[in-house]
Length: 216
Image 1: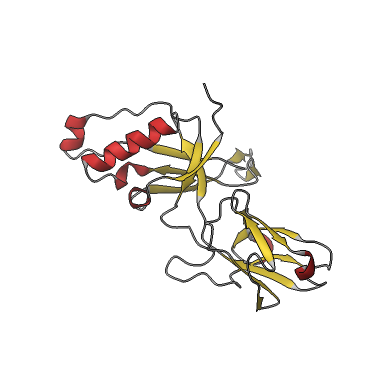
Image 2: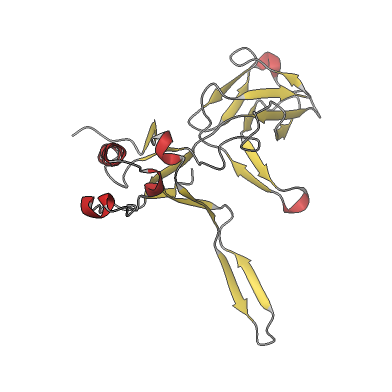
């Protein structure tokens, strides 16, 4: 039997994904003191997303495609790409990505590698999310507002989200490195089984297709 990879670069059917529900989840430990005040502790440094893709299944053909995709991923074994219907760009959903959407680093004249990042919020409370599965061909990079050319000035590893500048284009000291991009979320099926009743589906019941983010 051939060795199976832990991650497939194939994307879950996009038309079905756009009908999915779900979003980020965090884990906070909350202790109520005798005084009634709370002590809150962050258990997870990063959020983790959960989705139910069943809402995107509109007919039997779409349901068959999900079953086929599930079998090819061997259930929960192999992770894959998923397009979050709400959050899949470096900008707002109705905007077009720009090479100045996100600050991903500051040059020092020596550093050549910068991870793609999407920030949420402003100031000290902002959250920086690592983007590990950018969409190939969608990444735009600028240094101090000057657009850079892919394969000439930089290259991007679409499996890790790492931007690498060529030696002649390494950002100078104190320059801002910014990026715009589209991205997918690495996920897996939450369970090793799909429990689907065709009779219930025909009656209008939505099957549950649970997906969970894989942190890379």
